[in-house]
Amino acid sequence: MGYFTSHSFFDTYNKLDEMKSGEIMTLNELSIGESAIVSKIDADENMTRRLLDIGLTEETKVTSLYQSYMKDPTAYMIRGAVIALRNKDAKKIQVIRGHHEDVL
Image 1 (cartoon, helix red, strand yellow):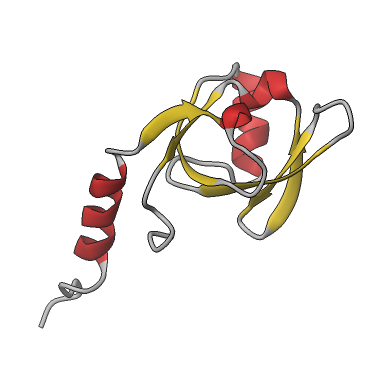
Image 2 (cartoon, one colour):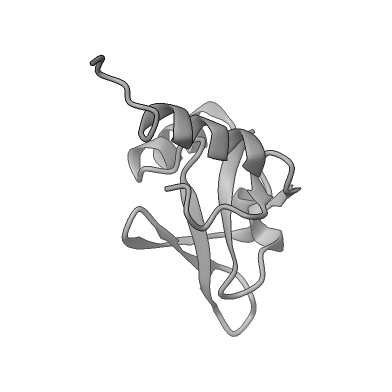
């Protein structure tokens, strides 16, 4: 028996492929309590490095948690940590909203 079973890598890959049929939007468009999967980060080099440092990479699940009184910044759950991002930065993060609750 090989390292990959039909219930590990290939199942996850197929779920990610199915998820791509969801709605594409930017992170700042998520409603409070809504989750999505990061599909692309289109920020400058410094901001991309900061996002990668906090664990925000492609195929990461992100949940919108809270918004400040003025609606900027917004707090997101990223890999078990609550991170606040300004809307101008969240607009540069493309996410896929869809059937992905059981992916990651």
